[in-house]
Image 1 (tube, one colour):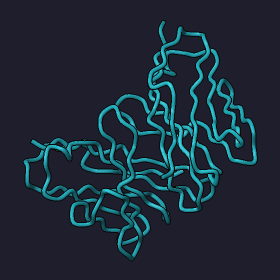
Image 2: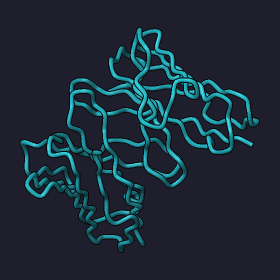
Image 3: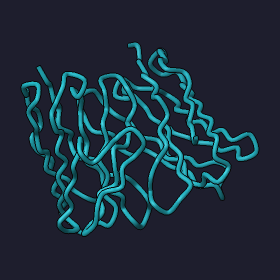
Amino acid sequence: SAVISQKPSRDICQRGTSLTIQCQVDSQVTMMFWYRQQPGQSLTLIATANQGSEATYESGFVIDKFPISRPNLTFSTLTVSNMSPEDSSIYLCSVAWSNTGELFFGEGSRLTVL
Amino acid sequence: GENVEQHPSTLSVQEGDSAVIKCTYSDSASNYFPWYKQELGKRPQLIIDIRSNVGEKKDQRIAVTLNKTAKHFSRHITETQPEDSAVYFCAASSGSNYQLIWGAGTKLIIKP
């Protein structure tokens, strides 16, 4: 299994500012993902964080709005840029366990934009 | 595009009764079907999964079935307990990139 530390756990931000969420894994993993989950909704994949190269974004998500870093196999950051109230959500870091395909999730970062 | 539909959106059962959640998928290449449980305010956690070479899998009170021809899979839990109350998500994956297509979720309520 994988232990994932994600921070901040929650934050309240002002419109127009940016926030960076950090994800630290206790072991080296190849596949790391960033998800968004609106209250009462399912999980939406934002992007796959690729080590040493640009992240792969899903439809509807762009690098300028959600820049992602992945400097090594145990760490990644997601920045939510120029925030608006519509960005209020829970953001989850996730890693795939290559032996089984199981996804492990961080505890999530609850973001509220005023 | 690829899609996973999940029903019902809410399911309320009496403690001790059984509960069934059903999902259908659109991509015939899907070969991995996990089920995740998310308790209120917590992260999603894998509870059981099934692969396309298996028709049924059981783990204590939980059984999952897969019908590849009809492209649907389901999760059946017996003898429900209060701690089973949560939101359950089904998902499907077809590639080696571990990307999942998620269902909309089912809120399971266990009435005492």
